[in-house]
Length: 99
Image (cartoon, rainbow, N blue to C red; front, side):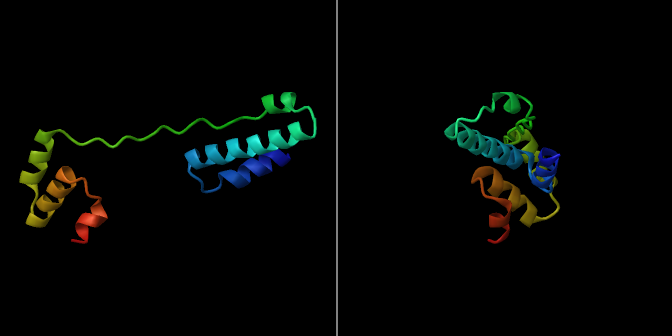
C-alpha cells in the first residue's frame, strides 16, 4: 500500500521522462542503502514496476518545397519573415518574435 501511495504521489503532474528519472534514482539510492546494511533486497526489487522510457522527440526541418509553399502562402510579410528566420538561422519562435 505504501508503494502505490508513493507512486501516485510521484506521478501527479509529472512528465513521464522526469518520472522515469526520479524513480530510477530513488531505486538506486534505496538499493545502495540496503546494500550498505547487508539487507537482502533482490526479491523485492523484482516486484517493482519501472515506467517505460519516454520516446525522444527529434525536431526535423520540413523539406524545402514545403517551406517555400508556407512562405508563399503566408498572408503577411511578418509571417513569411518568421518562417525564413526559423528555417535558415534556427531561431526559436520567441526569439524571432522579439526582433
